[in-house]
Length: 310
Ligand code: BDR
Ligand code: CA
Image 1 (spheres, rainbow, N blue to C red):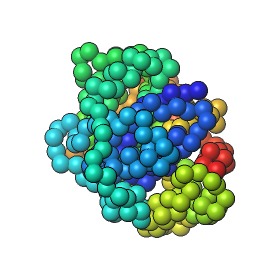
Image 2 (image 1 turned 90 degrees about the vertical axis):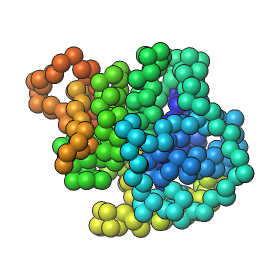
Image 3 (image 1 turned 45 degrees about the horizontal axis):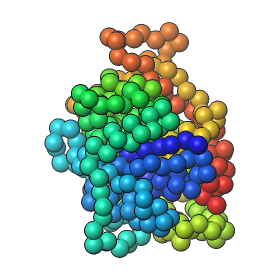
């Protein structure tokens, strides 16, 4: 059983990743930190609550993460991609009140689960950076930290060079790359090919029996429609954030390299991530070496997604 603490910004692909993790028989979700990114924090908290309530998992704590980049600049949201409420075409109810925990709860959860715990960061890296910058943090106790982020020598998605989670707070990404240990980056190199088709969603909508079955199609259809413009010719959409949990449980289906990760924080190439992929890379300073996932078995990804979501 893998215990995970999720940091996310649901967001359509985050929502699918959260559903996948909550449905997976070998994953125990110990908490969900709601940040900002795809949509505002107010929306991510409400969306997280909806996903927990549908599965009768109200006991999983919702924790407030960062609501803006480390610099304090206003976040740029992506309602055009993720829908008016962040869940595609779904219009969620607004509960009168939602119980949330302060960020200090993550340190309690890390103390409690220690080496059994994986941190899965699906959003801007602001919360994770704040955690690393805390002088008394206990992050060295966790087993590993998985990050959906970066685009290594491939086109970005929010700019020609940058991936959204890094671009949204590049200073935070730099802090995490410098201070993090046992980090694995799953970048667009892989996640852009983690495509779930509309037919798969139709199949699940008709043949699965989970508390999530009724919401799969409304969430996905808006998002995949937007992706027709973002990636012309695509049938469906990439579920970037699901790759973290697929990798966690099936690492042998993913191909990795170990390199230092560099981040450009400003200028026209803001949010660019790069690494020295030469066979004999040069290391700079004493910065740590991280794992970067560069390839995967995409047909396995789809089959496994169907199995877990069924
Ligand atoms: C990442 O950015 C967000 O829009 C998605 O949820 C994903 O985490 C993809 O670049
Ligand atoms: Ca996300």
